[in-house]
Image 1 (spheres, rainbow, N blue to C red):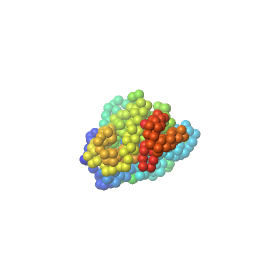
Image 2 (image 1 turned 90 degrees about the vertical axis):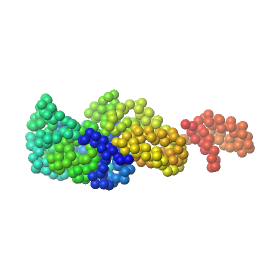
Image 3 (image 1 turned 120 degrees about the vertical axis):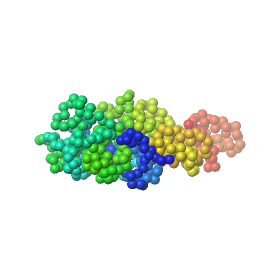
Image 4 (image 1 turned 30 degrees about the vertical axis):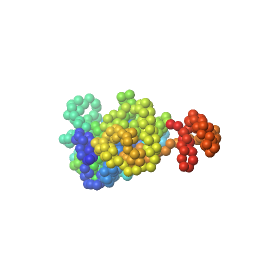
Length: 458
């Protein structure tokens, strides 16, 4: 079955075909590293991981690029307020460079705990200032920029199809503008380069043809994506909050310079919500992956929870849902472990699993297939082979799990030795009594060629 994916730009599910098969260029918007990632952020990276694993299952040669935003992301999408890195520096008492390094490492640990495959390239915005300046110069040469007292801005009125990704009503925005535009010509215009405030030296600033300052948030992704994947590549991903501003402006920049919309497919993961509100750092309190770990949850239980909802539907987070995900994952692990050695995958069941995944990454349906296999009548070896093959996409590490070892109390070990003595003299009634006493204490006896083994009762 062909892989079909939803493209936000065309608003339809389309058959995926690489632009340069078998190569696939995949760009994902990374974290702004002024604080920890919250679990809503991490849901997006789980969706992107499923996408990459699916592409690789189709034998595509994926080049996965994911940026690190360590400068230029202002607290307001309207290009006002301070840089989030400077804000984080003030909050922590560390330099902007120090917090960027600290939170980047924390982000990478979170991804590893969730079994998210590492991108092949992790470009940082601060390492690509020259590329961003060159792209701004290209846009300027095409006549899409103007200068204000605080920076270089993109003139969105020059693009007839500006806002196509988000279906923005630009004329309505212009007519209904109620905010002070300052020196901006249009409400949707955005900064390509911001000047450092007069008389103030920022921690992160660079020389440019227009003056000392720093790049706008949107220019970094256009510049770095084009450097590593070319000016028109296969798939660009991010969260749904990127649609109306960040990705819309990435496309505008790319159309102005490269005459492309940057990516053939634009894909977006939807919000994690709590009590109907999206999770966001600006709200002050947010849940980290470490919060879940501190509550006793395995990080992969959160991954399982995310797989229970389609990436294009909002997922409501609560502790009851986490409990349910943890229970389901543990049961699946116990099934897989108990099936013993794996055999070949059942092709019919695996085809059904792939049909669900190939239908725009329908992970809830794919999980339903896995549970049908687990509860079905296939031989155990075939069940295990099928589920482990599917887990190469699900990423739950089912084949690596083993039940935790439980220390057997000395009193139970003594009862087991007495049972063996009773069996040796064929005192079956005493052996059965001792077995029942051991079972009542919470242990099953498994008789094997290597002797009796004790197993905690489930």
